[in-house]
Length: 160
Image (tube, rainbow, N blue to C red; front, side, top):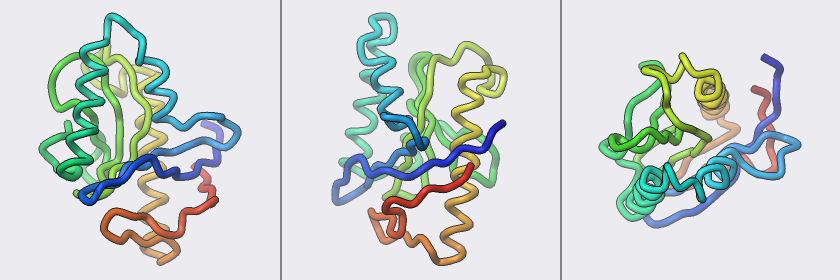
């Protein structure tokens, strides 16, 4: 897999939680925006899409609480998916804390495991690599997390 540069972008914030997404250098839209554009007008997945949008509104209202997410990935990463139940559509994300959520991309789950689907696996691997880099930057002190904000990310690209 070729190395790509990615940055973290702010999406929205409430008193309880902040939403971020990743954006690959050279792309006009973020991973989350790609997801939204891809499924917004899909009649077959309308209910699944609405459920994910609703879940995101609840997260902003109440925080990125563990109960809202389907655990995915490895035991030592922050990878999760929305929704926790209902439907075939999945949005992959990194649940950093009860206050910080990094949204990625996603798609229709057609296989039992995401790693059996090339597209979904690609989204997951990108998020897992970013999660690893973010943890390293936090350990070094170049990035800090304060309640609902991630500081030290402005115009900073990371190599995945």
